[in-house]
Length: 410
Image 1 (cartoon, helix red, strand yellow):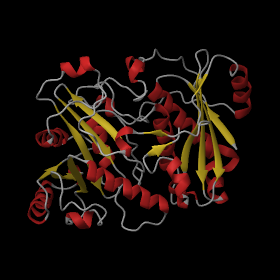
Image 2 (cartoon, helix red, strand yellow; image 1 turned 90 degrees about the vertical axis):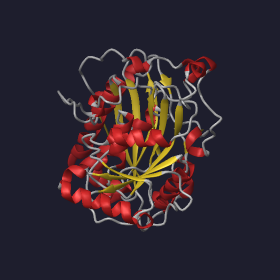
Image 3 (cartoon, one colour; image 1 turned 60 degrees about the vertical axis):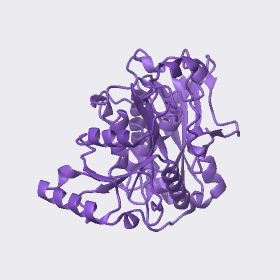
Image 4 (cartoon, one colour; image 1 turned 180 degrees about the vertical axis):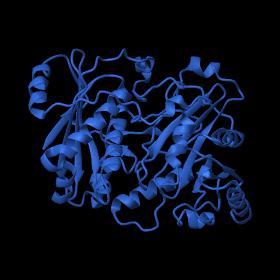
């Protein structure tokens, strides 16, 4: 079954960040102008600004789509089997490598700092929220369900004299149930090994634990880089209790410092940034200062759809879903066409996703389409299809094509 959502409001003027990247286009089409770190108005989740929600039936949309399909379009679909590898996700960072041109390199001061920072912790402690606050834009999806993050998300936090490259990682889990779990935990290990410094995020409401217990043996930090323990959600407990938590962690954990924060509201995030900058080595910027992630647009399109699944469905269903952007066609005289496939493992899960008379899937497609339009700043035609692929979470070859080994076929 296929459903689609369309917006009927006028297309806004493309923002500055959609300018061509010329020779840098291989980096990422996702190239927002980076806001001042002290201003967090742009960190609102993409789902907040929603008005005039409109949808139409698949029959109406099919007729319009095929009428427009013959117009100018550029197909960025996954018909090519050649994988696109992420420079910094596949290899240990090379401190001699920079993607800036000579002119940009000359503009950097000799005191410029740069480096890689791994954000580690158990599920649902606020790692992605902290990463988004650091970057100043939403690069990682956030829900109230644990293990929302599956990939090692790279976010860039840049200033005049620094560039922090953040790895937002999946939550460390105690028991691996599927091959997918083991591959995600391998990405966590790689992030810790590659990092110049490490942030271990904990929930202030939970009883304190030693670092080895927190990380479940996934990441050994015996020969660790500088490590900061971030006590998140301090706004949810009394000040006296947070002081006790900090005292315990300072006494019984082998970390360099402990900083309490409320990532949701941005409290203490500047302190975390300042700590990172005090530990990073001098070095060049690895990326142009005006981008905030190296992931391409279609990666974020898939993540937006997956976020809506986590927000709309319960129990096992969100965890059994894999979202693939099967086709992405940019068209100069019509709405961009995006085809998304949602894979599940059972027919029963497919029926839950679709819902009675397709209403659940239609609501999902509409919510996702609105956020995608907000992200892309243009109108899109979004088609969503649900397919059954039994035991996809155990298929290592398939998981690699989905990007869980650092390589993604787009």
